[in-house]
Length: 226
Image (cartoon, rainbow, N blue to C red; front, side):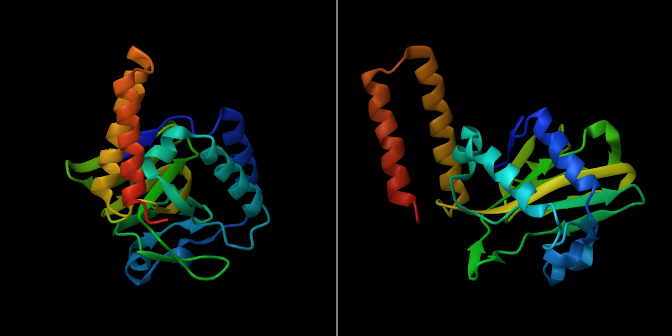
């Protein structure tokens, strides 16, 4: 399931993030890539000791907590602290890869990456290339969103970022362990939740709607792992 979410960050929040990124020192992007992915990766990333990284992560996580569509799409159990990357217009890219299944947590242990997300921080007209291309059941999807918008997709998808040939592409990316491990079940719950929302808006809180809402929550109870 691939879902785009508009305005995860407000324009003011985008400006705040970008101001901090402009004052930051970048490292090689391979620092968070596995063996296979590192061979395909040519970009830059904020290192863990970057001065502004804690504030940037707090800002993004706070924005996610208030976004109902993100919650229903990802059904997050845990979110790995977000990362920030940069692709410059000298042809930097990230070739075809699949995100690693297990990601090390700062406090120790591992998070299972069920869902990946990219939060765009540059406007599409600021750079050429840099298209996030994701393989899903409908073929290749090309994603290039406005600053502050996000795309959420299964971590098991083959995806890439095409070479940036002009300008600078800034983004935040993250990995989520979902309460619902199976992508098909997450899709069913998402579709049901969206249909319930539409029915509630059109018909009000009817008795059948209350029962259907109970079915949604009982399925979530039955399938949830955390």
